[in-house]
Image (cartoon, rainbow, N blue to C red; front, side, top):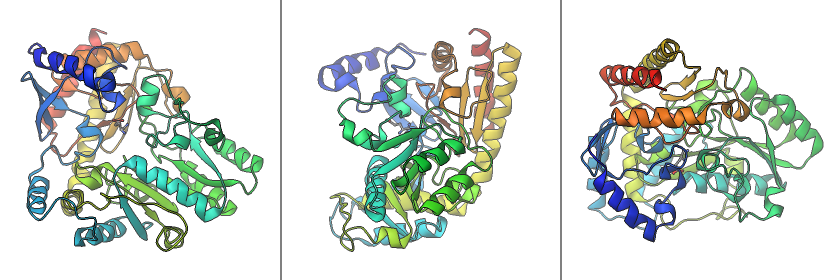
Length: 428
Ligand code: HOZ
């Protein structure tokens, strides 16, 4: 690796003008120590920093880059659309195409409203669920992260967990009192919460595959159980598919596990790398939104033509190619290689994976919940992260984030990653 001279100078400047030098805390390397590098450009499975270092990228802009960076069809769609104007604040045909494509891919999305980020999507879905049911309380799960929404930033994952602040300052107690937080993968805890608040719970919101405390899977029957409990009670079941949507297949996690939630939230991939969010679901619930109903939600840039064009290009491509089997094959190759590497190095490790999403924990495992994830040796993860970076491989700078494989990662890239990991683990 070349010395990080330019990155260091930029970070010093950034610290003067931007809190912590970053526009989102998880970028600050606080979970692993050291300073972030600054990116110059990205293409396919690689990013280049401003000092000329080439890195094989497993962050993929935190999920959106499923086809690889600067995918030509997406770049061309953005260029073409920009020539017609970058924002209208007037309905445009791309919004309708996007809504229809989402509905075709994810049948539970009978109606959809576009917004600008995953945070907006979850915030709006919660408000809608409350407006629809006339109830106030919501259930969320430990380690699940749904953006930086007040009522959801309670025992949250992602950057909040990385920084050891899963409960943010600045949230009125009255707000967090309306949030019931439960352990993931524990149906009895959910049944007890419903019994304790009869007729009071508006919604359960969850990442069907939690990917903000690393990555762990729902146990067999768990999602079905949540569906049954919410249906019987009249509460709204909300799947936050910001990370899993169009990542685990065109139908997202709900397609993979064959569960129909009432509402779902999307982001990341559906914007093709531009800022976007979406929430949608049952038509009778969605029709409670203004201008039809009493629940207000709005946005100057919602349905922005550039984001719609980029997202449509990404989704249309994903819908045509044999991308998902290829991503599964790369994921399986990585999983097998990493398990063997850890075993040979004698390092206690658990490698969780679904499709092209993964997380390696430095613990015997298994990891099914936040409590299990917290057993990972985070000092060891920090050493591993920096060891991999020195080998030219960029992982998320936190134990509590998922890794992403893109369609641009080749079998040789995965092989090189495993070889690097084997060497780094021997030195841990
Ligand atoms: N929402 C992303 C996944 N954990 C992290 C992006 C960020 O917080 O900057």
